Amino acid sequence: MSGFIDSMLIPTDGSTGALVGANVGIALASQIGADVHVLSVAESRNGAVDSDDTVRSSLEERAEEAVEAVVTAVENHDEELDVTTVLEWGTPFQAIREYAVRHEIDVITMGTKGRTGLDRILLGSVTENVLRTARTPVLAVPPEAGVETPGEVTFERLLLPTDGSEGAAIATEWGIALATRLESIVHTVYSVDMSRFSGNQEPPDLISSLERRGEDALETVRNRARAADVGVSGSLATGPPAQVILTYASDRDIDLIVMGTHGQTGIGQWFLGSVTENVVRQADVPIFCVPVSAEAP
Image 1: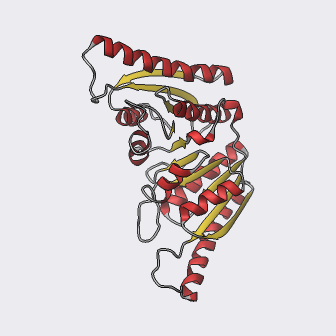
Image 2: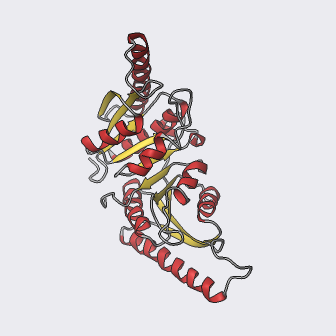
Image 3: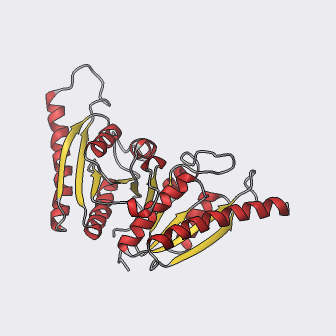
């Protein structure tokens, strides 16, 4: 066992997006030695368990096929992984969250887009609701990651964005723990965002103050990485935080972004719904989202 991620939940609806997320989850579970739980939630179009035997049987068959596809991917990649399969009826995000709580799951891994009903986009419904309500980290994987097998996945370079908030600090702890386990290099970035201030010219003292705050936040991450004997580099950047993070990740071939789901942009603004949500929606690499309620690894 890994000691900080012993179990991983991989929800699936059988869609391409769900399978991409599963492949990344399988790769991570294999590298850290975590048990895998594969869950598919059968839900009728109106959100209730269907009393029609034919419809119920069809939904169950689809759910079973979705689970079996993930199990096959696990077996083809790492036969030593311990796999538990589950089929449940209910509302997907609630079933995912409740299963994670009941079984003390350490990380939930899921695609950001999938199929519920008529190919409804998951982000904004299932994935977003899980991100907003889960008390454990959620590894959100966009279909743009284009991972066809777990063997394609690498975790060589991790990006830990910081804004100096409590949420960023908790995410940093998880990011450093992952980097230590995966033998990854850590990058960190702080966005000096002047767009939230009015006026055509920014006072020099305000810019200097924000830059000093940014340097302090970056140094906190650097010190934590050095203490764990993890290679680290980081820099200040100018612009809206989400765009800074996405650009940094693209320019430096980042494999995984680790960030808090709540933080501080402005005065106590939710990270999710602004920075984290925008990154999750636009990134083409997996994002390891850590809630402030998550215990330190």
